Every structure is written in C-alpha cells, then in structure tokens.
Length: 106
Image (cartoon, rainbow, N blue to C red; front, side, top):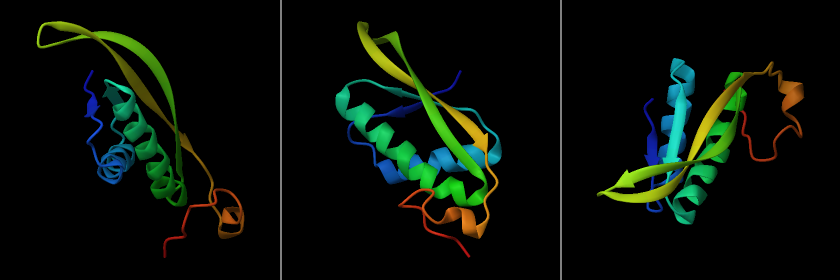
C-alpha cells in the first residue's frame, strides 16, 4: 500500500490538490504522518480537499490508525489516515449552508 507522506512542513494546499486528484482518478488515498505537526497539516489538507471535491459530487472522510514504523533504523509511531470517498448529489440549491467554506465552481 502506497502512502502520501505528510510532514509538518508540507503545504496543506498542495497535499489537498494531490488528494483531490487521486480521488477524481479513482486512486485509493492513504497518508502517513509522524508527529503532531504532520497530523495537523494532513487534517488541514483533508478539510481543503473536501472544499475542492464536494462541488464535483465527491465527499471524503478519514479514519486514523496507529502504526509502528522504522525510520533510519529507529522505531517510531506514525498515524496513518485512510481516506474514504462518498458520492453525493450536488444541486445548486443544496449548496446553500451545506459547507460554509465551499465555493461554487462554474
């Protein structure tokens, strides 16, 4: 299983773009984060990606799990986030109040 590796220095907007692109292409999205800062950036990216995807008929959610990994021979605990895709029916009238930060496209 491939993972998007997110660090505390990752740009949430860039990660969001990667998530949205993978969802639109039907590619499973799994992220791996080590440290609180990395988890923060990943969660922000998921929130931004939702804003990109909802107007296109997709919504996403995530499920976190702990995972023990090796980095440079040292055992670390990572949080892995599996992203789940939900198909939604989006009509212009449905958008009002659905998600405050979603902007209509087109």
